Image 1 (cartoon, rainbow, N blue to C red):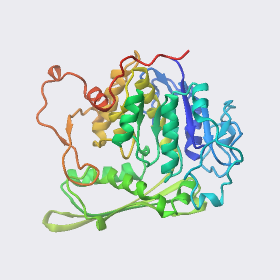
Image 2 (cartoon, helix red, strand yellow; image 1 turned 135 degrees about the horizontal axis):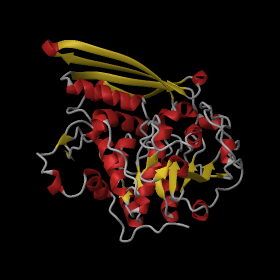
Image 3 (cartoon, rainbow, N blue to C red; image 1 turned 180 degrees about the vertical axis):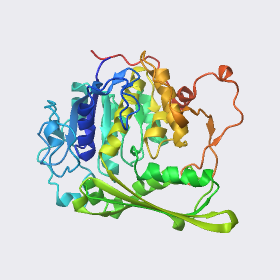
Length: 423
């Protein structure tokens, strides 16, 4: 298979972990089980097939350096688990717009000079997929970059809570250009959001009424420093809250749920601590309370998910899919165009890989991922409510397209002609 040429917007901790991860697992065998990655070979693309072709940032400390060096340049402070050889990819001066907030501006000095011609560089470097790692709250900057991505003819993986893939306007823009997008806001391997979702689902499955809940997060990376500026948190709180409430069959009053970043503790570096409390009512109106603490290295926790998202995006390019990719977005992101329970979303992605993979099918999903249920939206809590199973399904032989293919094509219709492979 050809390489997947990836451009990165924002050479911070998350980019560092992604680049390290590709290097760390480049010699993995196809039968290996790697924590946080669905398959070593996903649809014909090995992890090492990801090739970094361009990078953009505004930090004076990083612009002009090779991406391999910028990945470990302060204020990056994530754990170093792999050495990165010279990538021959110079970090270019990007666009600022609202990318630097009040607090980031105190520690990051903008590089001199003007913004590089993004469209030309993406075309010249033959980028396939662009990954967005801008700081939370970069609404205008993200939308500006999306315009460049569309003009350059690249797929897009949106890892931050600026709503692109789930918005009808941007869906139509990507469809018109014949390009796929996966978004929005990365859902980490085992992070605060997925843990809170699992606990919420446990309460619901066991018939416990959820009365109140909170999720408090704090850490020591630039993401948490940036989010001290509360004005930049609106989309982040919406994204994290809807990810939890979307699997609830009823709505909670706004004052009874709080989900979001809370504080910045510099000595934690790229570690994140999450505290979750859930208060519920059991049989006999007897109270039940749960408290949990989770500690993770924040950036590596999402890197494997992005590796899978990039490869799914490339499969979509190869097959001429366009618009928001429903199945990958539902599994990889907190705020996808359509929310599904995680086990259903996992099965949908496996179907997507089998349907659009090149020659080598993904092995059957293990455990709950084997469940394949046609879901229909139901009214209820914020974020679309819990998706309840549709009416009794017809026998598999008569249903037509696999679930993932139906989901993918509902908002990612094939273009008239498949995308021509680059040489």
